Each structure stands twice: as structure tokens, then as C-alpha cells.
Length: 278
Ligand code: GLN
Image (tube, rainbow, N blue to C red; front, top):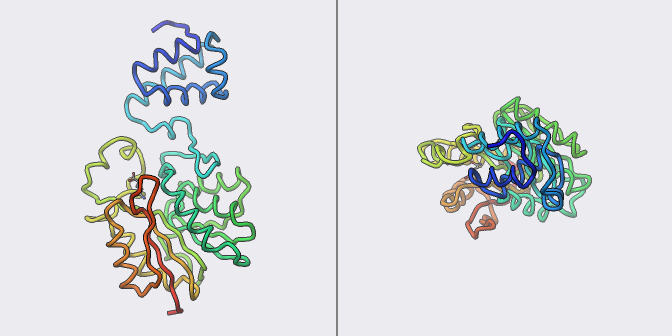
């Protein structure tokens, strides 16, 4: 490895170590430039500080750190969200929750929505921006996550009320027309927790008891006390949990129970409607 490099040389060096797409994302991050510049000006010499910084990021990626934590951002529903290791990295699959929420409250005046376990705030901020006039509350147990979510709301100009709470515990009597959650749902002994990006993400945002259903069960059981009559609950869950979650919803007395498929054709979200007050 030479003391100096141009864009083409830096990418060539990185390509032998990590995925080329990721190598480009990291170089754009260091140079704060659009993708077109990497293509149009491959012979541009990197400042030595940039080249050193780039080598460091590539080495950290080789050691497994997720690209989103290295760049500090990830796109969700067409917007850039700040992410830190205090929050789960937003996944494209979770956009399904946005689509379902938007479809179920559009037309409602001043709909009140709740995002449980907001993490980066990706869901709450997106819903506040997509649904004009909606009143969005976001809760998380983690103070560090709430800082990230608040920063995202401020950066993207979304009006969201944030509450630090362990699920519904800190909410009082409040009721909502729609509740969404992407809770932890991985079985605590699942080997995937020791692989790839998951190793670096907050364990409390991922693992949920022996079958991964502990938090889903708690949310379903407590949601009726926080839903208006005819309000909706939509939950993201694991690839093999749809029928278990539909069962939880049925046991809790929900109606119109259904599951929806993610981009890979896997049932990823289940939900239902609460018909009456408790
Ligand atoms: N979808 C994530 C994964 O399987 C898990 C997210 C979660 O537990 N909420 O990688």
C-alpha cells in the first residue's frame, strides 16, 4: 500500500478487502462527494488525511463493523437517517410498516399514532412526514436511542413527541388510532446474533427471549389499553413468527387479523384491529 493514492487506486486497494459497492460508499463518505465524482475523476489524488481515514474505515469494515455505523447514516423511505451503535440500523423490510400505517390512517383527521421502540426514529419520523396533520408519539427505553431519534426528527423537520418508556409503562392513559412497532424478535440463542452486522447492533433491540416472542407478546397484550375503538396495531416480526403473532392477536381479542409480506415474499408484519375499549 502506497503513501499516496488516487480515487481509482484507493478503490482498487479496498476492493481486494471488501465489497466494491461498500468501498464506494465509504469513499464517498470520506470525500463527502456524489457517486458521479468517483466515476468522473478517478485520477484525483486523495489528500493524505483522507487516504488515511479511508484505510481506517476499510479496515474496520474488514473487522465486521456495519457500513451504516461507519458512515453514521442509512437511508429509509427515501430519507437519510443518522445512526449510531445505540440504535438498530433501519432495514428496507420495515418500510412495509410505513405503507400499512399510511394506508390505514389516510383520511383520518389528526390521527394519533404511536411508534413503540423507535430506535433511530425511522418509523416515527417517516410517519410524521408522510401523514400531514398526524400526531406522532415515539417511545424508547434507551436514552441514547432517543437522542438519535430526536436528532433525526430535528434534521428532517418532523414534529414527533418523544417519551422514554419501557413499552407502554410510561404512557399513562393515552390512546392511539394506530400503533406500530419493530420490536426485538430474534430468539436469544439464535446463531445469527453472532454473525454479520447483528454482532454490532444493540442486543436489546434484537433478542427477545427463547422464541423471540417475549416483547411481541407483551405489546399485543397491553396494546388494547392504548388503542381507540377500531384502532390498528401492526407489528414487524421474524420470518417464522407470523402464525404465532396472529395467534397472540386472536387471544387478545383483535379482529381483522392478517399478515403482510416483505420484499423477499416472507410474512413480516402482522396486525389487527381493536374493536372496543377495554
Ligand atoms: N430484521 C432484523 C434482522 O433479522 C431484526 C430486527 C428486530 O429484531 N427487530 O436482522
